[in-house]
Each structure stands twice: as structure tokens, then as C-alpha cells.
Image (cartoon, rainbow, N blue to C red; front, top):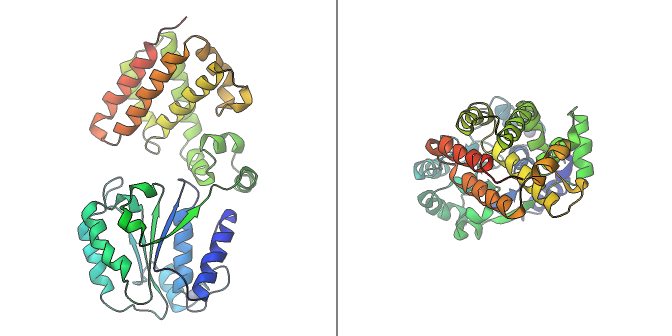
Amino acid sequence: MFPWQTSIWQNLTKSQENKRLAHGLLFHGAVGIGKKAFAIEFAHWLMCEQPLLDKACGECKSCQLIKAESNPDFINISPEEEGKAIKVDQIRELIEKLSFTSHGKGYRVIIISPADALNINASNSLLKTLEEPPANTILILITDKPSKLMATIRSRTQMIRFELPDVEQSMQWLREQNIEKSDLVLKLSAGAPLAAITMTEDGGLEIRDKLFNNWQELARGNVDALESASMWIKDGFKIKANLPLNWVSSWILDMIRILQGGHVDSMVNVDYAQTLQNLAGQVDLKSIYNLLDRLNDTIRLSDTPANQLMLIEGLLLHWAGLKRS
Ligand SMILES: [Zn+2]
């Protein structure tokens, strides 16, 4: 487990030892803080025949099967296609599997992630299992958007909140992973250390520079917004979906901070401080707020891939066309 998760680990393992662990657990909290990794480790611990205090033994039959990725008592359910729904057929199949007794001596654990991807039929179909799961069966649901789950699902689970680690702890951990510019990437990742790692792994910082340069050139009228939009889709969106739009959001919010008289220290994009100050100095607060509305619409609608190019074109045209002094 990650160093910021020890207290949750202790609470859950203690509940289990006291036979008070709920059959349905809902892990929720920000993206990029290791909820799923924790769930997998905890699942292994639950299934292990001779678990240690802080981990599975790694040697018993259950642990061996897990290593070989062939433990039938460990079931992962995710959307068949990334970003799509978890379908009712997947839940029906799960229920059928659960109607047979477990294979090992320990627990059977089902991880459903992201649980907010359960569509209505799948959710309804899962309710009864959550209410009366078969013996020695634990369901772990994971989400960063608990409000998107059906209330009846939430009420049948014990909600476990994963907090953002504090900055010091994250920074120390990132340094141990040899992450360069750890303070910057942590800020850009809203304090989520695993998201910070993902950003550096995918060449995110270089792509961010490229997009930000383009963003500046658009303001200067040096590049075409429609051509730029194609580049954003081709180079920007190949990394994690929506990351570039979250960056734009942070640029706009930094400009708003400056226009409202905020200090440079309050900015997220400390490495772009000078340029963002210049850009903010050319526009008024009202038009920046309009741009922010436009961006938020873009983020909301960008789940539909067919529209992506058009949405980015619209956003970049809006930014390029702002009245500047
Ligand atoms: Zn074991």
C-alpha cells in the first residue's frame, strides 16, 4: 500500500479480524491516489490463507494463484471498453459465478471499478447481491464520483473515503520515485501523486509545453485555430483523456487569479507565470469568465469522441477571438 493509506489499511484489517467488515465497501476519493491498487492489495490479503499484518503472505495456494493471475476467487469487473458502461450482462455473469461456492479457504473478492460506470440495469441487478452477498464474499466498489452511483447502491455499502495525501508526504514519495519537477507535476495533478507520475510517464510535460506555446501563438494571432485544433487532438489527446483540457482550465484559473490581484505564489502553473501574467493583462475579467464557461461546456461534452475536434475548434476560436488590448 502507499504510505498515505496506512490508517485505512489498519482500520479495515482490524474490522476484518473483529469479524465486523462490511460485505460491500465503497472506496471513493480523488483520481490518482491509488484506490484501486489498495483494493487489489486488500483483496489479496483477504484471500490469503496466512496473511501478515500488512500484506498477503505471497506463498500460500491463494497467493500463488493470484501471482499466476488465475485465482477464480478474485473477480475484477470493469467496462468492456474504456470509458463505456458496465453492462447488466456482466453483472448477471458475476451473479452466476457467485452462485457456486468459492474455491479457496479464504474470501472471494469482487472489485468493481469504476463503479460509476454501472448503468441503471447493472446497478439494479447488483442490489440484491450487495444486500445479501453469498458467504465469505466481499464486494469492493471504487469511484471518484460517488454522487453518480444510485443512492440504493451507496446505502448498501460502507463508504470509505480516501483523502488526498498531504503535500509533504506526496513530495517525499515522488522524490523517492525519482520524479523530476515533482513540485510542479504535483500541483498540476491537483495534489494526486499517482496522477503526477502518469503525467511524467506519458511525456505529459513536453506535450503541455507544446500546447501552451500554441495557446500563446493563438492569442498573438500567429497560428490558425482550426489547424491548431487538429494538432491538439493528434498530440494532446493521445495522453490521458481530458488532461489537456484540465491544463487549459488551470491556465484560465491562473489568469483569473492574476486579474483579481492574486500573488504569483497562488498560481498553479508557476513555470508559466510570466507568460500568463502577460496574457491576462490583455483581456478583461468578464471575457475570461466567459472563456471558462466555454471550457467547462467543452469538458462536459468531450466524452463523445465524434464531437471532440469540433469542440476544440470552438474553444480555440473563442480564445483566439477574445478582445485584447
Ligand atoms: Zn497467502
